[in-house]
Image (tube, rainbow, N blue to C red):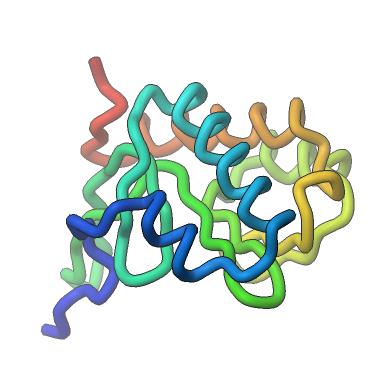
Length: 144
């Protein structure tokens, strides 16, 4: 079975932002997302793979037998846009997306250009819905 590429690393999150992000607005937005996601998740930021900033973790296992760990919440300040890893396929999440703001939806990622395009209170609700979902369906670091 293939090894997971997206695993927690020891790379410093703030060093990554300074060296990888080449736009001052994107750097500021990244720092704000770190502040918000740390508060919402209760976890400090960690690098996952080369470009994902994640908070907390959960263990998943698919029917195929593939399993691994992933961050509860996460984002990546990619070159053209941000990728948010905060979505769980629930009715509540789908309803919340209607008020999130200006974004594009991938299979499991939310893409946006700048933080001012996003409704932060809705982003918080989406993040909390995801943590609740992961806590109910996976082995999760969010259980206290």
